[in-house]
Length: 165
Image 1 (cartoon, helix red, strand yellow):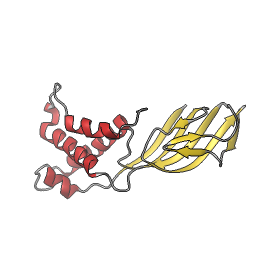
Image 2 (cartoon, one colour):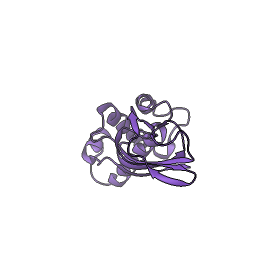
Image 3 (cartoon, one colour):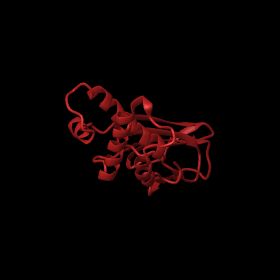
Image 4 (cartoon, one colour):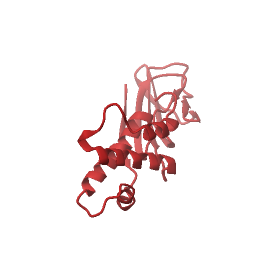
């Protein structure tokens, strides 16, 4: 049982990132783009928050309720419940605050849920945290101190973290 995710970071505003990092010219564009994508991926890994768009397939053991692991929730594409190895599409599940409750059976083998998640427009504080993370990586490069990290990033992204992350 596992989650698979097809993830696309939100479109990069390279001119804003370059301004934030006080970078002129184009020599570091590839590096800044890499750092942006890495910071978005870090937010995804740390807090399960999608800074862009994603299609997620959660293949999990059957449960009377299941909290979707990545958010913010977009829309649920399908819910399949497996009972004795037979898949049945559940079209009458309930969804409340990111928690899916299947309507089929009182127990089963597993569930497969396909849904979308992500911010259409990233909240400003989260965007600021990502830009701070980029600047930290850009400024320190391979000499990043091990005893001090991007605490601003951690503090802001932590607020977006759900209990299960």
